[in-house]
Length: 284
Image 1 (cartoon, helix red, strand yellow):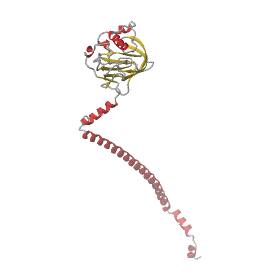
Image 2 (cartoon, one colour):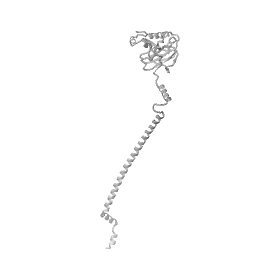
Image 3 (cartoon, rainbow, N blue to C red):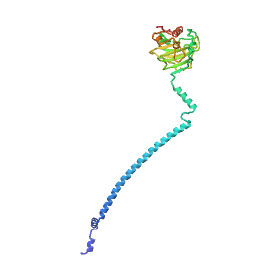
Image 4 (cartoon, rainbow, N blue to C red):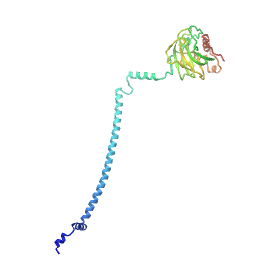
C-alpha cells in the first residue's frame, strides 16, 4: 500500500479534531476564552456602574452649583441693598417720609383727636340760646329717651351740625362708648367754644376728618337703625371721648343706674327743644 496516498486520503478536519483532542492547547484555549468572556461581562458591568456613578456625580454637581449660584446671588443682592442704604436702618429721609405717608394713608382713621386742653370745657357757658343754630335732629325721625350725660334717642336719619364748627374727634371703635364717638367745637353763636358730641349708634358722614370745618345744618353722622343702645347727643368736653358731665363731676355710674339727669344733659335737652326738636325725658 502506498503510504503517501493513504496519508493524502486522510480527512484534515478529522486530523485536526484528533490533534486538538490530544493536545492540551484546547483546554488552554477554552480557559482563555472563558476568561475573556468573564472579563468582558465583568468589565461591561463595571463600565455601567462607573457610568451611573459618573452621571450621579454630574447631577449632584449641577444641583449644588445651581443652589450655590442662587445663594450667592441672594447674598449679593442683600449686601448691595445694605451698602446702597448705608446700613439696614439708614434709609434716606425722603424714603422714610414716603413710607410713613403711605402707612398713614392706608391706616383706617378710626381714632383721631384734636384736644383743646384739660380746661377748655370750663369756658363753655351751656347757654340755651337758639340764635344762629339749627335743630341737629332736623333730618332724622327719632323717639326721645332719657337724659343722662346727654340726651338719648332711637330712630333713623342724619344728624346735622348745630352751628359752624370744627371736627375735634372721630372714633369708630375703642371709643369707651357702646359704638362711635364724633365731636365738634362750635365756632360762633352763644355757645362758641363749646363741644358737641354724637355717640353710640352713629357713623360719620363720608369723608369727615378731624380738623374739618362744618357749617350749620351740614350732615355730620348717620343714625344706625335699630341700634341696641340707640344714640346719645350732648355737650362734650374736648378731652378724648369724655362728655362735659363726666369731667365736670356731674355724672357717675350710680347716676346712670338711677337714671339721674346731669345738669349739662338738661341744658342740651333744653337747647334742642328751643331749636324745635324733641327734648329728652327726665326719668330719675
